[in-house]
Amino acid sequence: MNMKQSEQQIDQIFHGQLEGYTLSPPPGTLENIRARLKNRKRKQRIVLLRAIAAAAVMILAMVAGWMLYDFPESQQEMSENRTEKDFPAATEPVSRDNKKDGTKKEISGSGLSDNKLAPAEPFAEMKTKPMGPEAQHTESFALIQTASLHRNAEQLPFMQSVKPFIKSPAVSWKLHRKERDSSLGRTLSVEDQKLLAFNRATIADRHSEEDRWGLGLRVAPGYSSQNASHAADYSRNMTYSNTEGTADLNAGISVSYKASRRLSVESGMYYAQNGQKSGNSLQYSSNRYETLNTMYAVAADYFNTPVDIKQGKILMNSSAGVIEFSETPENAELSANLDTKSELPNALLTNSEFHQVFDFIEIPVLLRYTFIDKKIAMDMVGGVSANWVVGNKVYIGEGSDKEYVGHTADISDMNYSGTLGLALDYALGKKLSVCVEPRINYFLNSLNKNKAVDYRPYRIGLYTGINYSF
Amino acid sequence: MFGVCLRYAKDRAEAEDNLQEGFVKVFTHINKFRHEGSLEGWIRRIMVNVSLERYRKQKMLYPVEDIGKYDVQIMSNNIIEQITAGELLLLVQQLPPRYRMVFNLYVFEEMSHQEISKVMGINTGTSKSNLARARNILKRKITIQYGKSEKNQVI
Image (tube, rainbow over all chains, first blue to last red):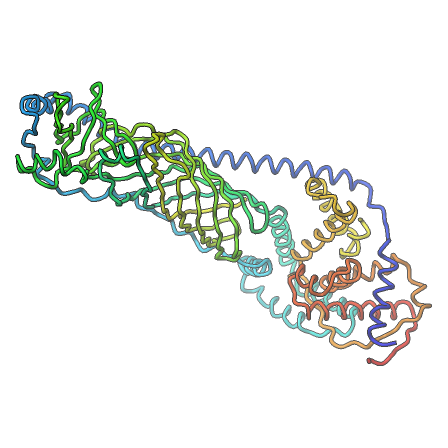
């Protein structure tokens, strides 16, 4: 008989005798299983309740932050309204003069001479609180570390006695077992044994349930712009859409569920913002602009945008859709025709850019694939989002000179966008991690319902935040 | 299933715990059973996985026995006939945890060394050596406890 036969013999002995070996489980096993199942359900309910509570707190915090963020703006709007009431005739002389000669009156006011654009509105500085370095380690390492934390200097010789014990060759299994038992009994103090028992229990608890749920907080400074196309009739009288996007800040919470080791589903709620700047209508230069420029030597950098005046409303074609003015902007001049046969259309003359800002509540459904699952993990993220429009405002000017002037018409309330991103996670511990996640978000439908306008915003954001798994 | 759990456990108490944990998983994830194989096979896999999980949690607490080289021993049928299943089970339970795991996975689950290395997070060489050591420990104990043996040369 050779070695292989010997091996087969021992395998066959055990396989043959033990494969079909049955033994009744001890009485009470079924009751214990029932109790464990009940306990597990209770734990799941507690976890769910905790998640709901955490989400509620975060939503409240977000809403509170949002309200605080909006407060100065509301104050500004109130002061603007007050200014209008205090000086109700501010635009009237222009209209009267226009009635007489159909041309533009010389633009006055200190605001117009000051042609400097205010710097872009600074977004809130992102602060990621440095987290304490939480040890990320294997279970054995955890044991040693935990043990070493609790063990005082006098007990260190124990480790020295363990080392040779582990490395010593055993003469026989029995002898080795005896040695092990006696060695452990001799070297382990009661305190150490308690510590080991505690560690065992801690590890068992830690791994008793996989952390499948995740809760995250995200702040995302970013840059938004748009892709737009328009019908010829519409674009003929449209403000010039420049390619300059705007900087903004998104924030929100995410909830994820790990479906498998590498794949997880993520949702959440984000406050998102998209905006665009609109400048002069250059294509209009051959009409009123040229006339005005020649006749009255109006500064070339004044915007003169054709507007439509219907039932007392001033309407302006912009890249994102028709802007409906709720009031004539301060420091702007309206050049209107009473004579419908006039060759010159109505025009609004300003020296500031228009800012169209759309606020969204974004609810994404994302799939996250982890392709590097280490202390520094890497994920691919992709999915779709429902974007509910909660804010639609048009401003003229920037920064502290920003003035609310109206809204964009025909904006659809619910919109859908696609998201693609790459995430980098750094584990701070078993439960906590920080992430940096560049994402691009592109609208799948036109934000504007007007058939002449196809306006699709997109946003590149750097989502940073913290994740908690449970 | 209790028999399966007993083979992977160091004692009866651990086997009972694994059995309960395994059935909790069975009842919790019964909707994931795809009816592609037998229910018994699926439950058995769960029991094995639960045992492996427990081994992974505890492995750092057990020193690995370094036995070195062993002789190849062939046991006579007389010896083998004497031993009951219960006694063999006890011998398996007394193996060092890693040897016990490797031996069970190889002999009873019929896994290859490559598969064992994956589920246990060891390399195939370690798996092979652990299996050889497990066999030799078992043989030696059988020989010591149950009488004579024939000793052959290593080929």
